Length: 88
Image 1 (cartoon, rainbow, N blue to C red):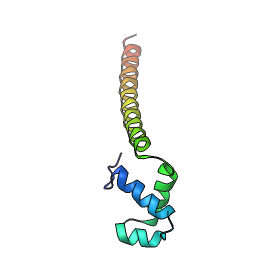
Image 2 (cartoon, rainbow, N blue to C red; image 1 turned 90 degrees about the horizontal axis):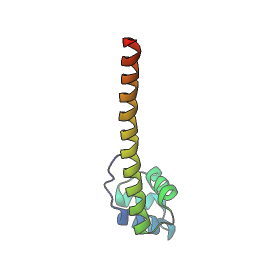
Image 3 (spheres, helix red, strand yellow; image 1 turned 90 degrees about the vertical axis):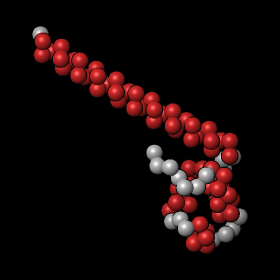
């Protein structure tokens, strides 16, 4: 997962400014981001508090670790299965 150059609190601040009525193109120019980034943040983090956002990031990190663990176990299982069929 790519690390954002903005912290959770900065993202929430930008979204609050956007919801407050500041035009998207002005925010993009001010913070040096693309308009699609603001819309993606709005879809993902809209209406969240700072604590909810931190919890979401923790869950995403845990999920990615579990996916890697499953992939490793699956590879080992398939390798052992292949090895057993060759011996028989």
